[in-house]
Image (cartoon, rainbow, N blue to C red):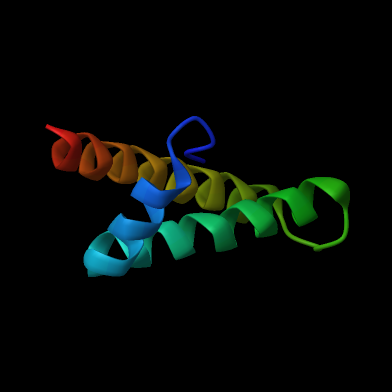
Amino acid sequence: MFEEQPQPEIEALINSDPEFKQLYQRHKKLDKKVMDAELGVLPIDDTTLAQMKREKLAAKDRLARLYDSRQH
């Protein structure tokens, strides 16, 4: 997430915006869990996996909106 944006900008947002920081950390945590579940490392049922993916997407969308609003 945010691979295309300059890292100093992302780090500045993480350090200055508590909501952005919380969502960023939540997205990273969900991303790891989803990846582990898809690799079979984390045993999880399909319903829970689908919910985690929806939550991860919602966090990503909110992060993108926050990032865009801070850049304009």
